[in-house]
Length: 226
Ligand code: NI
Image (cartoon, rainbow, N blue to C red):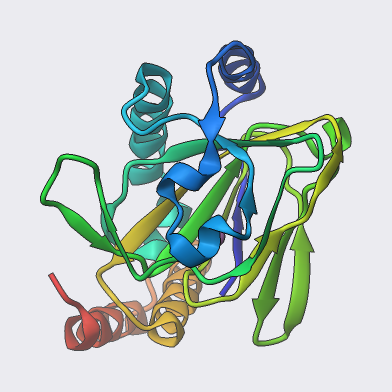
């Protein structure tokens, strides 16, 4: 399931973050790539532990844990510290599948990557190219979202970032370990939760809502890993 989560950061916040990113000292993105993906990866990245990356990352984590759409769709167990990247001057990242496990530098904490996320800090008209291209069960999708918006997609999918031929594409990216490992099960729970939320608004006193909500939790109980 691919999901667009709008407005995690406001326009003013995006502009402030962008200004800081434009003045930051960037490093070669190969530092966090594996042996194979280093050959495919041509971009810039803020080094792990960079004060600006920590600041933006923790603000982003706060927003995520307070976002009902993210909570319902991702059912997060833990989120890997967000990283920041910049694609410019022909920068690209060829087709790859993200590593299955991520470990924060200097920490024993490991995250199984069930879901990948990209939060855009540049608007689509500020750069040419730079589409996030994802091979989905329904075919290939090319995605560019407004600044402040997030794309959530299964880490099992093959994806790439097309070359940026004009301007710069700033983004944050990170991985989530979900309480529910299987994408299909997570998607089913998300759809059911949406339907329950809608019914709760439309027919709040319907007695079957209790049964339906109970069934949601009984399915979750069957699949959850805590
Ligand atoms: Ni990737």
